[in-house]
Image (cartoon, rainbow, N blue to C red; front, side):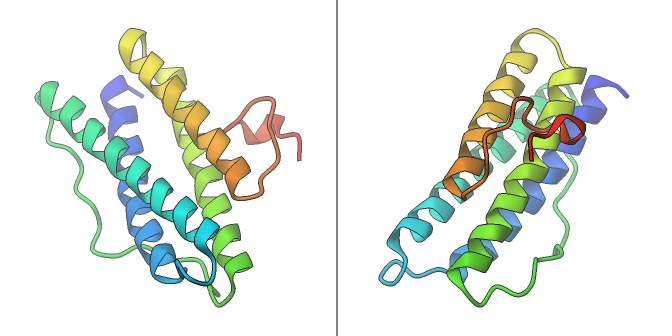
Length: 144
């Protein structure tokens, strides 16, 4: 797969992450669970920024960035803070796998950016009660 294909795949994943975090944000409460609310809000902002960066990268390559879907599958149920937190953790793990793939298929500045995104995603997993991984995004090497 080409670097452009990997960027498009990552952009598609970021579209999904932004959508799902929007739903998760609607299932949290600043008053009842301020830490979870702040974590979900920060994750939403980070994924929006990554999505926008990927759009700029692809446009700069003369490519048409893949568009977001009208809707995405959202984990269910989301009735408790623990369920929202678990959904966010699963989403970050999925993003970590996508960024690990991007690291493997890019070079130079794009690879450095992908490594930073992978690192930030791995750290965010910890925010949502994940466990540290030796190789984040590499499920076959997972420490879980």
